[in-house]
Image 1 (tube, one colour):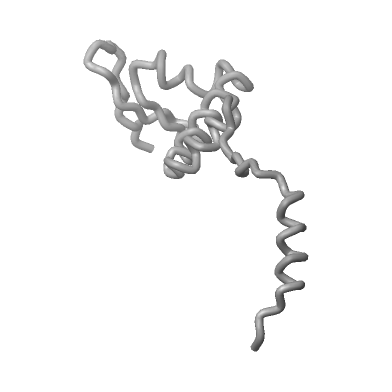
Image 2: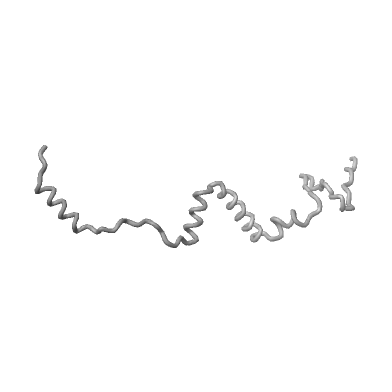
Amino acid sequence: MSDDASGSATAERGLQAAPAAVANFDEPDAGFVRRLQGFLHQFPTSIPFIVLLLGVIVFTIAAPGKFLSPLLTSGRICTLTPGSRKIGISSPSSSSRVRPRDSV
């Protein structure tokens, strides 16, 4: 192959019109969304925790007397059986007791 002098001269003329600045990809001020995105990309295991926390907050607001208040205010754990009889585990400070089942 021979070197074409006129071809390289044409290419050099095209480069003279090109800008001399180097491309800059830095973002000077990252907003809240970009920082949140960076955090989630860096720590992807935090996403289930955030979803759980948001779910607890939403359901606490949606059903204020039914979702978290039994856990925070009750001194005992109660379960209703299919016969609507309460079976409970009392806390030491509770004075009520579970009565034994009446014989039939």
